[in-house]
Every structure is written in structure tokens, then in C-alpha cells.
Length: 453
Image (tube, rainbow, N blue to C red; front, side, top):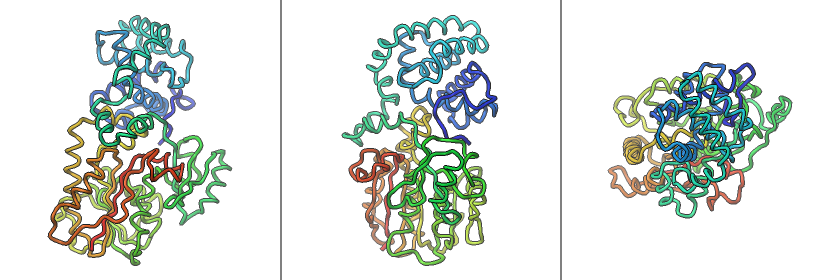
């Protein structure tokens, strides 16, 4: 796994740029047809995958602007494969994309890719790209006057953010265009954070510790790198996990009163297992059940727990829909529940630039219904005095504050519901985050801690 998303030629021994551009066009065309970036990249030959991933990330961040420019330069839409290659090249030629190659190299290699992929389109692609370079300033300005080109998000997405965050929506859209930091979580049961920083330095990797409650295990790398370069990764000394995601375990575990030794904890939507592992790193005595509806994704939880040495008799994983409690619950209530609910993932677009192009407006309401069903199904499984942490990696209020407000207002047969000290959204520039500049580096998450009287 390579967590870097900056554009580049790939790793030593990777194919030439023309081949990477061919593969990038295939990946972009697949995403535009509704396939996830992860699945599309999995189809790439392994030697070409890092370079293709880097280029595809850059293209999908800038796809709206590039598409607007292509429409201006070539109003008649070319066939999908040609459009994908042309738009990819335009995105990589964009002035604020810090292209890794000179203009003439990108044009030459794009034309070479076209000759191999669609020979009849090589002249057309050459002409459009050269015209773009000649008229770049005017074309960029024209693209920026169109909503798609201005914000590089679908219009419905922009309008929802404007409604939900009237003073912050522009900052949120700008943040989505940034390359995210690579953040590590040190397994301090095996190595101290200070010692691990020394090991990173010895390996030639610059990094620093993160200040703030809940981030006692967090380290930020100055530059992303493949995980196989991280000292002790295979031995379970460190994991990759964003700052926002690292708050789940301390929010659930550290609230007063403390959980008793051997407390029963449910991680209701556990895959891929980062938060599950963090809970057990902080409290290895927990009796923890990790559920996920997807058996393939659940296998990643098992793999993560094995790598970190956290699998044990008190830890179980099970493939099940958490809403269908009769199929998996043994009838014994839980002391604490983590509900990291399925959502639009609108808060992690920096790391998954395809999400904005894959989501549809109706997805928000559909996922909000699933979140409500999960809350209603899991609340009765909580002991009196127990706690439930609701989390989504979404910026949309319907999946965050709106969801919790509606849950608290609904009648319930098993007692009142109480939201205690909900930290709300973690956003760049959010008022409650200004005291710690590192908070602005975190993904967009919503958390609400609910206590059962």
C-alpha cells in the first residue's frame, strides 16, 4: 500500500509515462462509469500501480476544471476513452497542479498514449493540448466561471455544503483539493512514541508528534511513504490512521465513569479495523465484538488484529448486519458501543477523490435512513449507564448533527437518550479547533457521545 497521492512517475522500474497515462485514462473512465477508484486501480499491473494512482489522484481532484476546459476547447464530446485521456492530460497541465513533467513532455506522452490506445485520435489530442498551452490563462479563467470548474465538485454537493456550512463551505471545498498528510498511530503498548520518532529519523523519514487530547499516539510524516518503509509496521508497532479517526477510541473509552475491567464493547461497523485495533491498544482487557456486514471487509479486520498482535480469546469478529440483532446478539447487553456508521464519506474526499464523482444526491437520504436504523437497533443493546459513540466521516448535517437531533427527539420505550459533551464536527477552521492548529489537518468527522441513563 502506498498512501501517497502526489503525482509522479511511479517507482523505479515502472512503465513509461505514456503507459501510465493510458492506465490513468482507463481508471478515470471507470470512475466516471461508476466504479470505485480502489477497484479500478486494482486492475492495474502491479509495477504500474503506484504511478497510475498518483496521476489518477491528481486528475480526479482537478477533473471538473479539466472537463470544463475540454468542453470549451472541443465542444463535441469525443468517445469516452478519448475523453478520459484528453481530460486527464488537461488536468495534469493545470497551472496549480504542480505538474511533475514539462508541458512538452506531457503532450508528447499523451499523444504517444493515444497512438497506442486510439490511433485515430492522436492528432486531435495533440491539437487540443497544444491549444490549451497557448491559451491556458484564458481557458483556465473561463473554466473557473463555471460551477463544475470553479469547485471541482458536483453542483448538488456544493449547494448542500453551502446550506450546511454557510460560513465555511468554501474552506471545506478548498481543503478537499489538498493532498492529505500521512498520519501514523504508534502502538504504545509495544514502543513509545518518542522512541518511534527516533526510529523514523534513523530510517530517513522526517516526522513530528501531534499535541492534543486523544492524540497521544499520533505522528505526522513530513512526506508520505509506502507502509513497507515504516519501521516495525509488519511487527505491529504502527498503523496508518488519520487524526480525526484516532479520536474515536479515546472518546468512547476515556469518558467518566471509566469502563470496568473486561467491559463488553461492540464495534458495530468495524471494517477495515483501524478503530477496533485502537480500542484494544488502549484497553487490551476489553471483551470486544467486531461486526461488519461484508465478509471480505471483515477479513481485513482479522488481518489488522493479527498484525498488531491484538487477536485473543476476548476478541471476536463476525460477519453480520448490525441492524439484524436477532441474527448475532447473544442477549447480554454491552457497556459501550462504537457505531462508525456507513455514510457518504464526504469528509475524506482528500483521500478518496473519486467519492465526489460517484455519489448522487439521493445517496445522502438513503444512508441517513441506514444510520437511523442502526441507532434504533443498537440502542436497546446498551446497558443502563452505558455509552454509544456515533461517528461518520461526513460533512453533511443530515448524517451528523441532524441525525443525532432526530434520534434524541424520537420516543423510546427504554428510557431517555442523552447526548453528553458531543464534540460535533472536526473541520478545518472550525471554532472549537482553533486552539490546536493540528486539528485543521484532520479529515472531516462527526462524533456524538450518547449516554443511557
